[in-house]
Image (cartoon, rainbow, N blue to C red; front, side):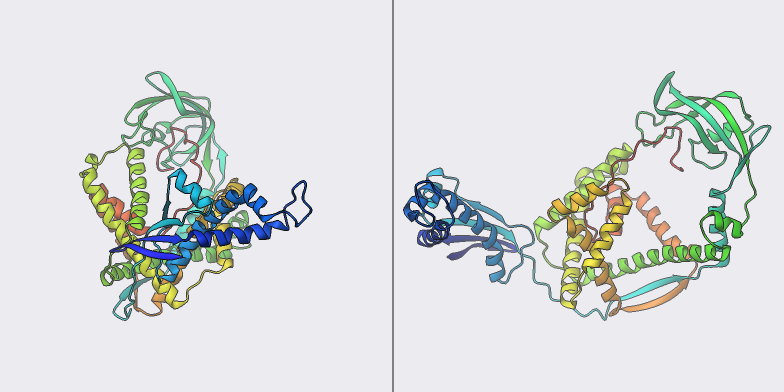
Length: 490
């Protein structure tokens, strides 16, 4: 077998592979001899079928199998033997001339095929001693715990039917039918719908007009859908909701005690506090973790600059670009509305894709050199979490991971990345800084405000960087459209 490099330009490689006809014939003869003792042909005793007869009957099909096996197995062997790693699946090409193909299958001509691929660049790892990060730490206060428990208690509170008019905080049970220009619209009707006045669940202005109603009342409520309402056919439109009040109920007093804990399935108020404290600490830890990770990635981005495989960048760009266009379509906006152009946005996203690919390669190299591995137990746990996120779709999710090439990588990649970040945290300089809840959250809020004020390309960059390193995962099925009366605050 001859392996001839025909292109070595940057990261691009093209290889011509030639397997002499004599070698192909020898492989074919070996297969025919092996088949001789296995095939059963009328008129011949087992093991006595002449090889020439077998070749006449099955030669082309056996040779076709050989060709497929060589094309399947040899590329990785050749690339590995050259000390290279292919960034993507190599593109394989061979003759399309039928006459030449027939000669190859008859072992009368050399079998040639070409590989085209990009190599993963060699990355020389550098010391991490110069990387410094600040880890913000928040002390959870009793007031904050009690405030969160109060919210939980309010969501679990009971209501008792009252006589008289509805007031702020009361729960109204009603039937309603919404119309725009006198025509009922999809999602604009419900029976026995419950709404707490002041909860902000429905369209602005809807709940205010329930103040003063009582059981048995019929009323027309006029509201205007927000201009950025998700359903474009309703955005900015005036609607009239005909309502019939079925019941008005007042909320029972909220108390944080063992009785509340029992309602929530816990043994005591102290246990409830313990769980809530853990949840708050976990939320803050996640925010702190993301901030620390962002600092590490930003500094790695400054340290490592090298050419990235175009194929990987193209794939990453396509993912980002698809998401941005989906976001624009859902919001009913264009690039012009975001004070940019499609060309400028493409340029910005391309830079972001290059950054993500480069950092992904760096983290992969760091993890490989450090011996970071993802265990089967961790993979199973990640799969279980996916199943929990999609109730009722467990079979579809399992089938997705079993039958989709590369799907398991979408589970492995984020686990591997986080373990590499853990490894880096052992090596970089970390300074803990105690901050308040407001200070911890303020920075993220500021980043969000900045992103909102930037054109679309900047917003996308902020979103994509926040999710840096994540791989594609099976998406939830689109949820059923919410009733149109219900606002974004629900």
